Amino acid sequence: MRSMKQSFLLIVIIWSLGISAQEPLSLKDCYILAEKTFPLSRQKTLLDEKSSYERSEIKTSALPQISLNGSATWQSEVIKIPLEMPGINISSPNKDQYRATLDVEQLIYNGNSISKRAALKDAETLSDQQQVEATLYGLKNRVNQYFFNALLLQEQAELLEAKQKQLKARLEEVASAVKFGALLPSEKDVLQAEFLLTRQEVTRVKKDKETALHQLSSLISTEINSAVRLEKPELSVIIPKGLQRPELKLYTLKNEELTQRQKLIGIENYPRLSGFAQAGYGNPGLNMLNNNFDDFYMVGARLRWSFFDWGRTKDKKQALEISKEMMIAEKETFVLNNNIEMQQALSEIDKYHALLEADQEIVDLRQSIVASSQSQLKNGAITASEYLTEFNKLYSAGINKKLHELQLELAKANYRIVQGYP
Image (cartoon, rainbow, N blue to C red):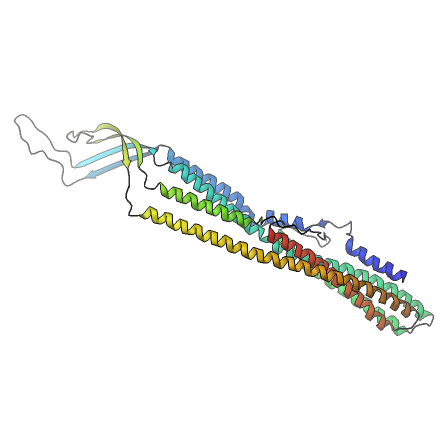
């Protein structure tokens, strides 16, 4: 009985302790690597760079606009003065005319449109960046799936190796009994076959773990050696303090973006006042009656005011207001669905807590049965096949307990992600 308890304790120790020679990899590490290395994460930097250039372009609207213009024309008719006076000859302009000008225009007032365009651009950038954050946050569900799949295979491989050691110990005992004629050689063969089958299962599970690690490696864009040891997370269930999902911040930023668009639309019909200056050289100059090349200049101000637009501005604002209402409805739908997911996750947590309580009772009973069977096998009271039946039931009970432990942690991890506290 003491030997069986010590053996089972060895199994428990192998479950719970890591191998120091292996590199540890935690679930949190995988979250961080997935967010940092996933190709989409580069968009944050690109969005910043794009916004910088766009803001710079907006600011240039406040600078003087300089243009160089030139023209050469021939026209079929020119102005004529129908006046004839003795001694006075007023010639008409030439039909071929030439002009080169340098024009400068400076915006003076346009309803502060430049700052409002810049504010809109900032709002768009923040919204786009938060969209990236929300998308990257969704990777955590996939990380959970791959990580816990690999972790279960790791735990299963360790448990199989512990089972293999137990079988080896029984083989040595039975071999000794066969040598002294206490048991038939066939009893040893039964245990040997189970030992080989278990070793084969260890190989299969380890290969499956390598495949699962490869999937995880692809997701986090980091090479994972098969010797890496995955750390079993011990997560707590956080008491709800309100959702912290990045999608909620995204809805807020989208709403702010729509508000900035409304403000920009509101100044479309504001008067536009600008000053201008023009210097040029041409034939004719400003004096149309002088047929010689001449330089000229002029300065002044321009006012443009589209005070009536047939209600277009009002319609645009109303359309954006409806978009805001749609955003609110989308946010409410998200919160509703998220709350449903939280309740489902909590139910999963409660379920696995209950299963684990039963698992421990089952393991204790199986442990007692196997200890009795082990003694009976040594005394020849039962066959090796009968012993293996009980021994495999203990192993199955241990596997179920380990599976439920990991499923409980997975349920906790999923709950924290749904809630926004990964």
